[in-house]
Amino acid sequence: DKTWQDLIAVAELEAGDATPVQLGRRELAVFDTVDGIFVSYARCTHGAANLCDGYFDGRRIECPLHQGLFDARTGASLAAPARVPLRMIEARVIDGRVQVLV
Ligand code: FES
Image 1 (tube, rainbow, N blue to C red):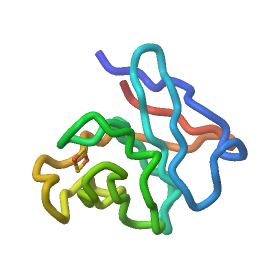
Image 2: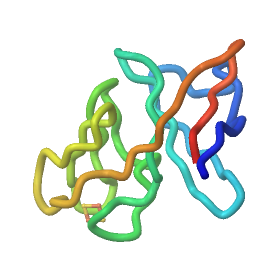
Image 3: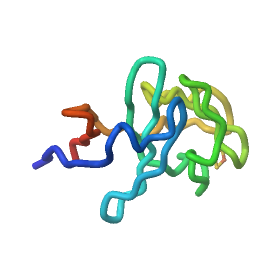
């Protein structure tokens, strides 16, 4: 069963950007979006790039490798060559800390 796990303090995030966070063996990306905090697996669904190295505009994250584009709030793939949506992870903020359901 999934449980809520502590990930990182909101204060430790790069404001308005994507922050890479390791949770055990999981490489996650924490997005500080215009609509709040969202979390996904950090690897691009097209190749092996870490999306946290890409350009983030508060809504969309652009892959640094081939410029695939994803909506960081829904995971939707918005531009080729990224076709498979990002795997999002349910997240919440409690007492200033980001928690994820994994
Ligand atoms: Fe991300 Fe190719 S690895 S678009």
